[in-house]
Length: 445
Image (cartoon, rainbow, N blue to C red; front, side, top):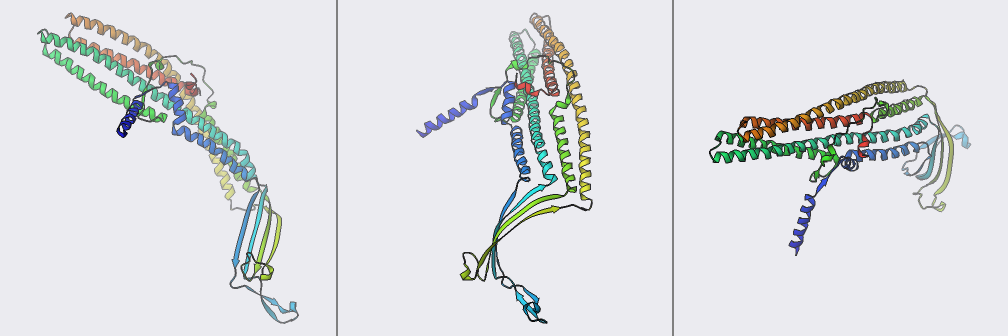
């Protein structure tokens, strides 16, 4: 019975593994945004920013602590006192103050009343949250771009495999015809050998392409956060050419890359102000209430009858700290903050320039790719016609085997050039969509 159950479970596992998951581009991106580690960590960073904000806010709230101590003094310190205070002028008295045992328990409070660094931290908390939200958005956009590029790479390589399969099918037919002619003494052995070599070469190319597909699919699944053992299928309808609208140059300041730097600049401004707060005084309210027990024995659970006496004491006060001279340390920190702000302004200029360049290059690549697609499509159609005519002429003895094999090679090259042009267009399309800050539109189609 156990063996039967084991066989059934194994069969179920094989059936599950054999299932093919069909992936559209939208489904691939959606899966990646939900499962890839980068996307998950970005969401955790946003969540963690809320805890960081709570930490900053806590500095503006009362700080309450409880304290307790138990001390044993085996040797009490003596104090020398002028005997005149006790009616014996001209003498000195050595007196030991305190008890062998004492214990204190109490609570203390500290409330910031004026602290510039706390106030600035509270203002910066909102920007901190927004920084991590923009960073999460940028992470998602980068993930979308990687998945889309890898997705189209897999598609094109699979198209190349289809070209090789068709080429293998046609060449095999030619080989069978020549073999029949050779068997009947109507063809030369060298012609048969050439077709056999041709079939072998195509099989080798086919196997290399299959290996390339496996590697590319594994890379795609890794980018998606999908188990590597999953079998995927990409529908051909996903690779239609739909010319992207070439609008005017977008406002690059709305891009996530630029917005993240701007938010970082704002945080650096707050950081500078926080350092400058070192020039300002701080004022805080303090308070404490304590209970002390003293006696010759450990005071816990003891009474006056045991020689132990308990009493309470309390204090309330203001603590003012006015900075006077810090060895120019605060000034040095302010200047460091200034340099960081100057550096990020340079980064902003460079980023804007790079984003503008990205748009112009993508637009140019789109135009060139559309021209190339039309040319290569016509070339592929023409190469197919040439092969068909050459094949007919070969069967009728009007063309040589070399002509036929050359025509096959030209058709394969034309078809591969066409799929390569499609890939270049799709990659340029993704770059253009990215330059317009619309990568998420890929999951809204």
